[in-house]
Structures are given as structure tokens and as C-alpha cells.
Amino acid sequence: MNKQQQKWLYLILLSLVWGSSFILMKKALLGVTPIQLGALRMLFTAIFLLSIAPRSLKKIQKKHYKYIFYTSLTGTFIPGFLFAFAITTIDSSIVSILNSLTPFFTLIFGAILFGFAFKRNQLLGILIGLVGTLILILKGAELNPNQNYWYAVLIIIASFGYALNANMVKKYLYDLNALSIVTGNFLLLLVPAFIVLFFTDFFTTFHFQNKVLMQSLGYLVILSVVGTGIAKTIYNKLVHISDPVFSSSVTYLIPLVAIFWGLLDGEKLSLIQIFSGVIILVGVYLVNKKK
Image 1 (cartoon, helix red, strand yellow):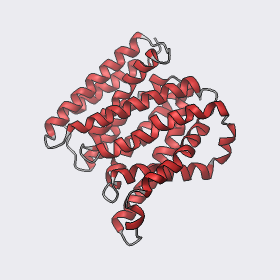
Image 2 (image 1 turned 90 degrees about the horizontal axis):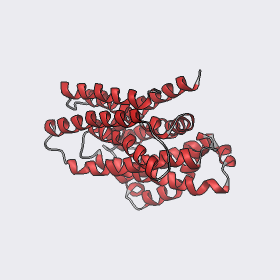
Image 3 (image 1 turned 45 degrees about the horizontal axis):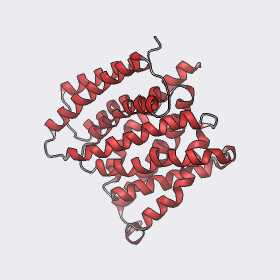
Image 4 (image 1 turned 30 degrees about the vertical axis):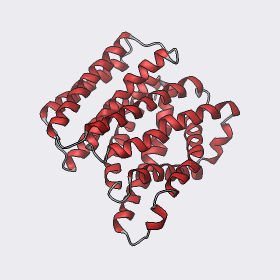
């Protein structure tokens, strides 16, 4: 399999996994608070990665740790809590759509802060994708007037973080393999996540007889192992073999999967939102077109 085929395979896998993560967060929040969700997700992922890939840490050099810290903060720690809070007020499908702003910020930050060049068709593709995203947001607000769309700001801030993360991985961690980066990220997050969880009431209220809590923890384990640990490793590999804009364009495909799960869970979707999904796919194609 050549690099071009690998790129698209990783893109599709990530869209399926991360597109499903929003409904998993929604279900997990039935038994835990947003802060607990964010902290537990990081703890479970850290335990998983440190159990299966401790040797990957040996490849990390002293010069890498500064940027591993930055990427853990911008790409995992802050977004993890922001998404958990946003999804308590806005439909999971709409939250995933708002995350589609990530490629736009990735392109802008890459050009302004990191010196990455971009092509005209990439900018056009991102703008087309944003048009599709805007239609989805406006129609979502119309269908769900009772939802507080001020929480959308949290997703925009998280998208800033993801954009910075993608550019830093490409520029400063290019010589480090994907698994080492992710394992290093969660090694640094292990203690902060535990401290955050300790100051909630999780340890005082936890008991195995609480069926809702145990179901939430089950969703969180799946979310942590597959949706965070494995998926972030694939994502960093994708950044290495492509570029930050291509990699972040996965956020244009994620909403299509998230909307499917949202429909199954009773969330509303109109024909114009389906049409806007097609527009988003056109944007993805242009972002990744070679010529």
C-alpha cells in the first residue's frame, strides 16, 4: 500500500472512530460529570498506552519533551474538558460539526506561526467546507432552539488547540514515531488528570452497584482505548506521512458519522443538512487534491 492509499485509509478509519466518540461521550455523561469524563478519559488512555507501549518512551529524547508537553496540553487536556462541557448542552452531531473548523485554523496557524505553505485549492476547499459547516450549524439552531449555542465557543477554542497540535507534531516532532508521541502525551497527563478527578466527588460516590455509573465507565473505556489511544496514534502517523491540513480535514468527515449516530439516538436532521454534508465532502476533496 503506497502513502496515498495509506493516507485515505487512515482518514476513513479516524472519521469512523472519532465520529462515534461524540455519542459515546453523550452516553458516558449520563453517569459522570463533564470534568470527571475528561479526567477519566485521560486516565484510562494513559493506563492503556503505558501498559502496551512503555518501550516507546525510550525513543523520546530530552529535546522532544517540551513539544510533547505542548501537544498534550493543546491536543488533549484542554479540548477533552471543553468537549465534555459542550456536549451537555448541544447535540452530539452539532458538536462534531463545529469541530470541522479545525482544518481552517490549521491552515491559518500553519502559514502564520509555523511557516508552512499552502495551495490555492486547499484554501478553496476549506472555505467550501466551512460553508457546509455553517449551513449545518444554522439549520441545527433552527431545529433545536432550546439549545444554548454559546457553548459553541468551547468547541472553537478546542479547534484552536487541535490546529496548534497538528502543526507542532509536523514541525517539531517529525523525527519521533506516532506511538511514542501519544504515549509521551499521556504520561505527562497521568498526574494532572488524577489530581482533577481527585477534587471531584468521584471517589466518594463510586460503587459497583451503581448501574448507570458502570455503564458510563464502559463507554469511557471504549472511548479512551479506541477513540483516544489508538486513534491519536493513527492521527500522528497520518500527520507524518501527509501534512497538517490533510490530517485535520478528518474533522470534515467526522460529522457525517456523528450525525448517523445522532439520528439513531433521536436527534433531528433535515434534508438541507444532508446536502451540506455533500458540500463538506467536496471541500475535503479539494483540500487533498494534488493538482
